[in-house]
Length: 552
Image 1 (cartoon, one colour):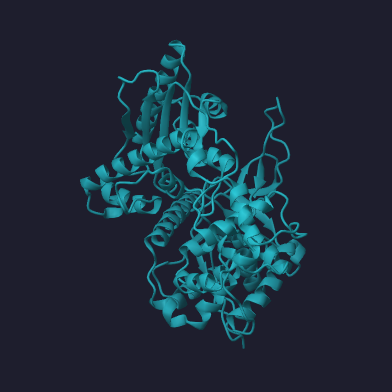
Image 2 (cartoon, rainbow, N blue to C red):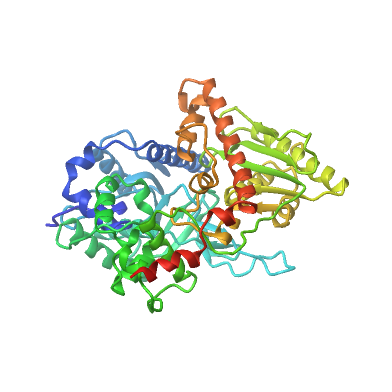
């Protein structure tokens, strides 16, 4: 009998966390979710519920028993019994399918859907992220090219090549599907015993198709992963902490962080893959890296500048928050400058567009914060109104500035989020009053008048403590009014501001969100002006920092 039982979530991510989770099961059971984790769970549940109702509706004209909904409120044993009964009755679609825990083989799992195909079932999971994206067309050609995804419509299992899409490889999803497929094989419920014939699927955030996976290769990878993870969970393979992105939200960080700092572990100053390469090359401590003078290790990634890691190590030892790459830092400036910051609530929409206009040619014109907002709980069509008002105001300022013979620039910090909601809003609300054409938004995003200060920071500086606005702007002297200000906290404030999910509406939180958003745009302005003026005198150049190595 297997000593441990692995859930699919145990198959990816930090190995040391897996070891700690299984060596201290009591601590894990007693821990409550962080607010961020709770929000993710609620968003995922909201998405799954929407897909469940879509599946139910698509088959509402089918005979009874075509779609079986396993009762999510029932205990585990009841859910298993309902799932196996539905399989025995050859139901075509089984929602919330829960498979028996296999203690002999050490596996457990459930699938949002089991779909009958031939004489057996295949698993389909429903996830709250995108599992495919549009294939890029040829230049001057509207027909997508190079799509590599295999997809099926959401109303029937008919997989076919989809030239309009490329799949997105999410390792966690694939390992989960592999475990579920293996469990179906062990239960003699799979569609085939031939791995080459096995398929599985995922319905992503857009919920407009099922992305189909051929399982043969994935099952081979899964078998290796499962064997190692089982040994780690059973305490047969020793692990050691290493800082990776996952650490930011890990409950074990309060234990691992001090341990890493005590041994001055190199992973504290470089990314996960880079720290593995350095460790394999015998560079395990920050001190070793800070004094390193040789060539980069042979496996060092070509897209990463090795000197930056040495600078990061020296900065960690010397407490240097920022290092200049260039003799003279530079950033795009204009006569009329507008800072922009957007606030969204998960995947439900963008409820606030904040702006700060500065006319550098007219000192009498006040630097004024303007917010375009909807306080109707997302999702809401009123989001179209607030976005249209924002876009109309921004476009009018651009046109007036040009007409006056002045230059114009709009700024944001890390435009990925803003671009997503600019384009997404234009697409979702197309045809409504004031909503721009997608081509108009695309032209703006591609223009020189849309400037990302995050990119300017990356070009001008090495950032030992990260490149987030709340890491960099304080170096330029900016302070947020709210000591709790963060993207994570703003999610909680929004819930209370609109009474989301049945919460009591707290109007004071709306003012808090306005101030948080205003501080974000003011921070971008302060940072830009600092880069253009004082940074060259206040931030050491990398040559000065690398001189640390000559103190030996």
